[in-house]
Figure (cartoon, helix red, strand yellow):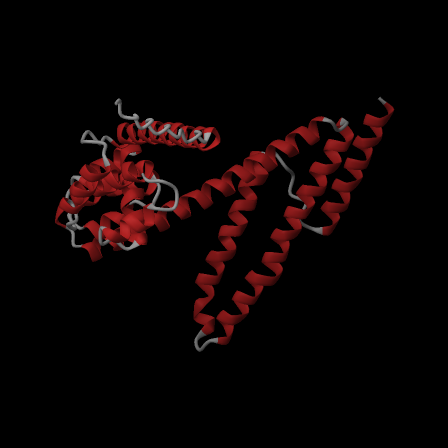
Length: 297
């Protein structure tokens, strides 16, 4: 008698969740794309700052720990690796990694600034081989090349303490500021003269002459005011002091210098002496006749 065979259990196939699979696949693709993009940006940053080591998170963190000393070379090498690490790190995680490495956030970003700027500045690159104090070098980083140029030319910069280097940096910065202000004023004056020149070019000859006479009259009035006011007051004070009469030669010398300048102008421009009232009146009449003849011509 044949045994009844137990039928094999039917397999139960679980239907695949195609939506979930598609989402996982899409997420994996996005992660891969982000990783590729981060690696490309990290390589680009490494090239910019002159970093030639391994471009992986683990290698970078190991080297950052190695360079966590306070020499200028260590500052720059640490800054380079922090810049590259930042490109590899997902958004929002870099600060946490910096803290795990034992850095204050501000210190890390100063190191990064130093590395990035030194890679672009030949003057900073030169100073990085001369300055021994890392803290002083980090102060140099915040200044323009124009300020650093004088420091780079100093023979004793490698022997200067940080305090003296900071002092010279302040002096160079103040000197540059004064030079810039002087240059700005000079440029403003040149611009003003150029605008005035263009304005005069549009005037008629008689208008130009009238303006010149007005300006000459103003200048002469200022000179007369200085003589009648300032010079006269100085002479009065000389007389008020004890033995003031003994200063006659000194006072006469002052007036003589003024008179000599006036005589020199009169000779240079062939001008008659009309210093008294009658001569001034005669000169005015001659000028009136000359103007009348010019008008009739």
